[in-house]
Image (cartoon, rainbow, N blue to C red; front, side, top):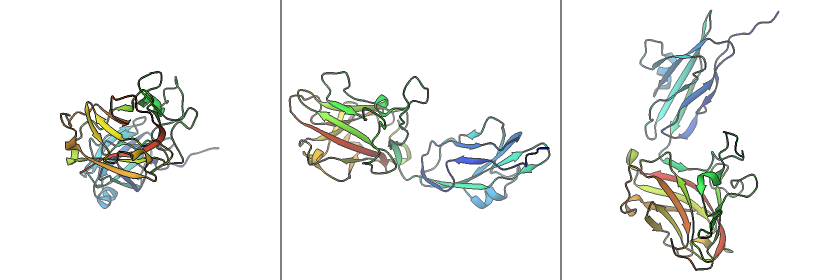
Length: 281
C-alpha cells in the first residue's frame, strides 16, 4: 500500500531571514502534498505569530488551495516581519514554521537581477534590452545595452547581486542614452526619499565623456566630465530636488546617457556598467 504523511508548506518568498525586501513584496509559498487549504498568519512580532490562533490579530484568514500568495498591501520602511502558513488536511492541521524577513532602507529602482535570457515569444521572457530601450536600429542614438548573446546581462562585472547592465556607447555623430519605463517605483516621494543613487564603472580605455541621468526632460550630469574613465565601482548620489520641473509623485521613466544630451558630433566610444539604482532618504 501507499500513504502520504501530511507535511508543512515550503519555499517561502521572501525567503526566510531575507533582508532588503522591497515594500511592494507579495508573500508566496508552495503547498504541501494533499493539503486541502491554508491558514495564514502575518505580523511584526515573530513570537506572536508563532503562538497565534485564528482568534489572534495576526490571523489573516483562510487561503484556498491554488491561492498560495498574499499581498500585505505595502510594507514599512526598514522593518521586521514574520509569517506562518498552517496546512489544513481532512483529519488534522499541520502548524507551519515561522518565517521572518526585513524590509530595506531604500527603494530599488532597478538592481538588474530580474532580467533573464529567455527569448520571445515565451511569456517568461524578460530580456534586459527589451526593458532598457537604447539606440538599436536608429542612427541618432549610439547606446547599446545588454550582450548580443546570452547571458544578456553582465554577470562578471557586478556591484551587487549577480547581474549589472553592460552599456556600450558610440558618440560619433550621435548622442547615447537608454531609457527604462517605470512600473514601480513611480512615486519618488514615498517613504520620504530625497536622493537617487546609482553605481557605475568605466574604464581608462573609454573616451573621456560625461554621464547623465534624466527624468523626462530634466537632466543631471555627473560632476566629473571624464566619468566614463572612472575605474572600480563608484556611487553617484543625486538630490531629487535637482530634477527641476519633474512630478516626483509620478515618475514615468529614467534615462542613463553618455555625453551631452541631444548634442551629437563629439567622437567617443567605450563600455560602461551600471548597477543598483536606488532611492534613499
